[in-house]
Length: 193
Image (spheres, helix red, strand yellow):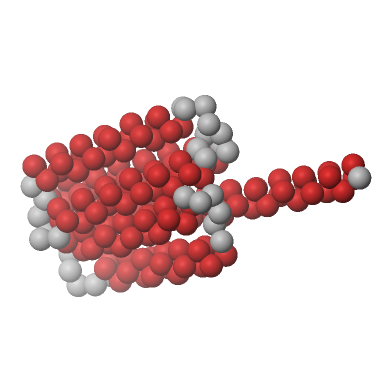
């Protein structure tokens, strides 16, 4: 009787580790794609408008991740759909970076978008670190991914016309500040995975 209990508990621990690993990989891929967008803005390979379209796509992916994680179970079907969307976004990033359109990395709009995308990278890294360390539960990670989707949508709307004004950036920064506080609060609320 004791041996079968140990085997069941070991299997449960392994499936939890497998879940955490795949969740971490998904979030790490978000980080990598945001870094590619930022690099494209800095090099002039991406215009503000192109980065805006890519941020809209990242927003949809973050929302999918949030929906998939909120029940605490990332199914194989959900993982496949998210991976397919991330693959599509990756191809779109490549295509936009290698088309004929170029941006001015020193323009005020590009500088604003670069700063906002860098903040996305930092916040996604904080979420990934919280998942890895167990400071964030799956439900908490889901809420935070929904918050990231909200910030990405604001960036996408602001840059849709190819220009981000100072007022638009302040609005985005306010949303980013709120998200940063939520990440801190969720990571330090004593709930663990």
